[in-house]
Image (cartoon, rainbow, N blue to C red; front, side, top):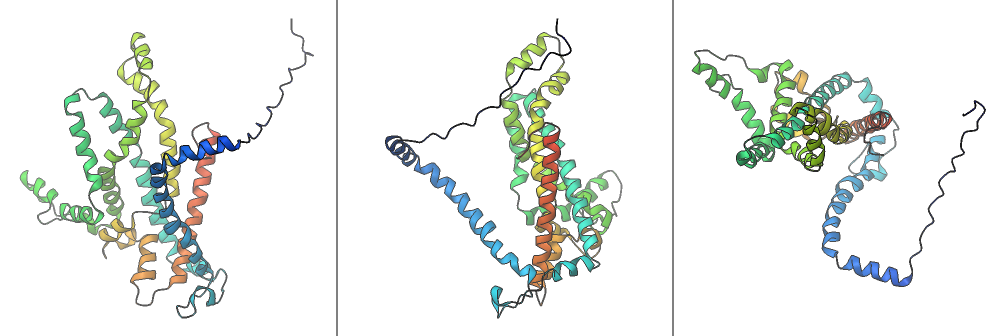
Length: 330
């Protein structure tokens, strides 16, 4: 019988793995093996070059956020002004409006867009008409490949109160659609989000279909033997396998929460809905590129501010996910 004074067993700490040194012959074989797969390394080189050119090299120019950039003087010759442009953005009346509009649309799209690809993937898995399954998948994937300009045109035409798709459908039932949704500021976020869900949920379901394809069928066979219904199998078998991917998508989505689709927002924007459709990305475009006198230092400061906020959000969400035992990035 164990006593209260019995000592707990001492658990030794795992030793650090020793670094294995390869011999010259092993190194030669490794180089030969890598040379035999040069095609794969070449394909890997292309995205690396892309990120270096478009993500890392531009970091050099981020310093103009702390300068009064003068084109004649260049980046190095322009005078340092510290946090002047950040303070200017904070003191401006636009900051809170831009952040509010951007966050409201981004979080709306993120949380409303997460369930639909999951539901669609589950429908693909359990759809009874397997003969038409591939066709249905192709139909749902297709909208993802429509360009942003074409998609914005479709949305505007469909919501046109004079001869648009909705007006035509309502007219078939004897009604008259007179509401111009693109002119209602409060309706902009819903139009933006739900059109995005329709366009991207099929493509987003691909990841979840791949996860479901990797679920061992013995789990379902054992559950059916025990009398589990389809809903119980989905809830207790499929969903737990999907949760890590859902959490990972949430973490990555939080990193882009301030990067609302700039092109689509700009194309759907008009003077009537601008109070709700003006976001950080569209404001930066107007001030930094479209303006007669572009203020590059000011817009760079806004972009840097946005990046810092996005980084903090990723760290916080990743920490929460790790705390509750789900998948995390680090």
